[in-house]
Amino acid sequence: MLNKEPSKTALLITIGLFVVTLIVTVWLFHYLSNPQARSETFGFTLAFVCFLEFLSFGYFAALSIPSFRKSVVWALYPAIGIIVGSYVVVSVATVIGHSFFSTIVSSPKPYFTAVVIESVVFLIVSGSVIVLNVYKKAEDISMEKERTSLVRTGVIAEEAYQNLLKCRDFLDIQTYRNVEQDVRKLKEKFQFCTPFGRSDAVAGIEADIQDQIASLSVLITDISSAPEGKLEATVEKIKHITVTALQAMERREKLLIK
Image: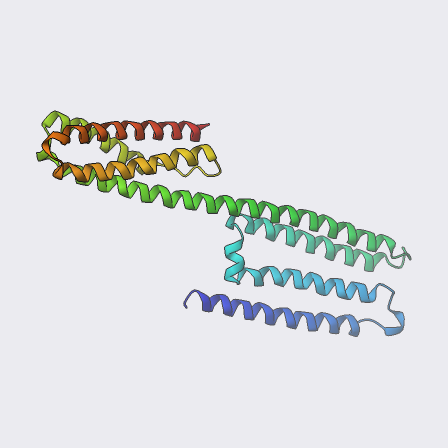
């Protein structure tokens, strides 16, 4: 609730300022011009200026909408502001320039042409940013899913290592040291593991690592209850899975470097 109220207040204030500005703009256009002396571009210019005001206030209003903020990559906020701001400034300069030189250039074609070109460029650049946002947002979602998956797998590896520490009395010293060293190295790998994103090859390796960590956790849990005749086989499986998982982690790291 504390996060929603400021956004709602900011949105209402922005809308209120826009309405006031719109009313003042319409009043000034009609008050400062003689109905008989108004040019054929009067209505278009008034509508265009109101549109620019809507665009300007709309940008700030959109920032107050939580759903919009979630749909836009944070790094693109400044880019959107620069694009909107540049278009508004250039368009206002065009309107002012037309007002000064309308007595010299009687035809409104250069004015309309300039407005159309500016608007087309604005639409193209805005469209490019929208497409970039879609791809970047999809990449961020993919990275977040992978990060969550890595954290979850890292927690399982940590739990497996902690369970192994409790199995010291069930193994001879040398065997325990060898297994403990490899499992510790494996769980430490996850402390510096970075999400890769957008790679089927890495996704396949990570799926194998998750399966191996899960199997390793089960085998380590079984050490304390394994029959004496099967304990050696269980330890060998643990060694094999640990080495395989470490090799998979190294392959993943090499792909990340590339």
